[in-house]
Length: 314
Image (cartoon, rainbow, N blue to C red; front, side, top):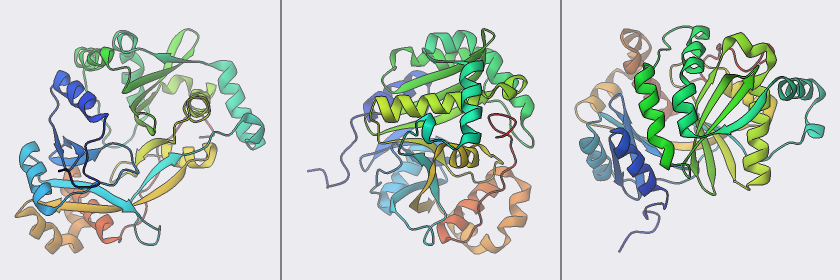
């Protein structure tokens, strides 16, 4: 008999099939779905879903995915208890309820840009120019994940998975100037995992139009519980989440962070956490691990936010 709280969610088989098609490593344990990124495994799914994982389970996940670190969230937390959070929106605000300054930018964006939901075929054929141009506005260590051939292959794989993957675009002068990719956990949550903006068109306010349209579609028309922009940053500089909190009624949803390290990494990280700031300068991945450990202990300030967002006022 499956233990309470450890039943596999109904969306998991679909994400497993998509990962198999893309050649991405994944594993299901304790009723939760895990992926691995740079030797760090994490639970994938609705932000409010509690993950029930014992240390023996975490070790199983780490071994299955070749991970040195596994992290997940086990329940809600108060801000004073945990500085780990996702940035979410629960309610759509009609234009008449938006402060006048922000309402002006949303209207400009809606006039300047056409917002469309896209299919995977379209993204595969036409999304790469917007994707690659977006990196010209980034500072620091931002880098592309795909060349054009890999981009086309990756997104084309999602063409039969429109139930769990949604794509949206903003168009100006017939050109795709903003591209957004969402994972869908119907009917609970839509989670954005990629936003790319063509810097040449930021002053047309495509992000304002895009997020206003998305909030209306998912929260007002489709009745989803929330839109999730993802977990807080560990090391990357980003201002998108601050933009969403200030302009679109997003909020910080705090959760209890659980972290498991494989031996001997755990002893090393715990024993040298006080040196984490200096050691983290040696490697970005190491910096992320030390930041995760400080967050687990509840001893870290919010990340610096410097990257520009959806318009000249974002």
